[in-house]
Amino acid sequence: MNKKILLPLLITAFLWFIMFSPWTAQYINFWYSMSCSAIILWSLCIWLSPNFKQQFHFNYIDVSLGIISAILLWIIFLLGDVISKWLFDFAAPQINSIYQIKEKQNILYISLALTFVIGPAEEIFWRGYLQRTLTGRYGKYVAYITTALIYALVHIWSFNFMLVMAALICGLFWGLLYMYRHNLITNILSHTIWDVAIFILFPIN
Image 1 (cartoon, rainbow, N blue to C red):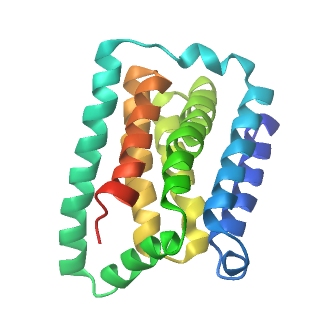
Image 2 (cartoon, helix red, strand yellow):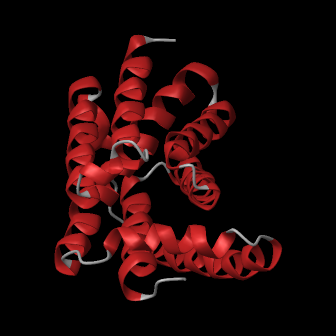
């Protein structure tokens, strides 16, 4: 695998291990660590692919699609919450454990971090850099599936099945959005609006 792909993935795996693993997560503030990790990913994109800015296209159709897709993804998760809790006894405790990371935290900071740092940086890295780079080497369908799987797998350190599945669904959803629109404005809007909705405004737990 090309070092421009392997190096960022190794760095990402390490960062997500620090944030989510039971051996390290207890010693750090998740939201500060996530913000720092997002900045590192953003910096990697600037270093490895300076032309990623060419993927930003402002038009009303893609802005509207970003907003609508965020609402659709929230509805998907609402339905998924009902179904998973009906199917699995462990679903509710695992979902509740995800929401525990915001307990006793500054909600304003979390909202700002999700909107201006975490959401944008994740889309720039995962879709705007990794999926785009893999598309150039292996084609859009392989890139789409591979990026979504890796996005889910880096969350495996949490040992939380519901979180890994949530990441997989998000990876598939935003990857599909990027594959057909190739516009990071759309993806960033979708990601950040969904983040704030699911964690702050309309949590599902």
